[in-house]
Image (cartoon, rainbow, N blue to C red; front, side):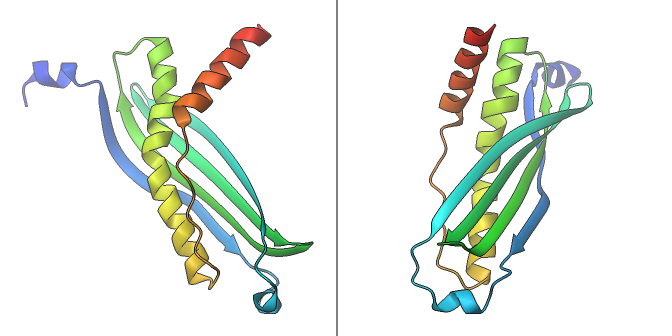
Length: 148
């Protein structure tokens, strides 16, 4: 590949991986007989770390807590990560990539991991709905602008 083509490349996925995953179902098997009317709490967070010039690790953290009444049914944590080459972007567009574009790429991998963990634990299938990371990013930027 010529040096000129390398310079023009501004985005590349270098690696996608599970950084951390855990699943706990501390009250099994007694919870298997309960009527399945779960209360689901969903927590989402993203963060990034600059590894070196133009190389970023971006982590999408998803935590799901499922209870029936007061009984903890299961707790599922997944940190889905990726290493991305991102270059030649102004700060505004770089922030969009770090907080919206890349987490959007990572989400299907995290969703599949969560679905697999839940089904392997013998609980009803859990399919997370798509997340509009662009809208979340826009809301964050509006909030940030209004609080300044």
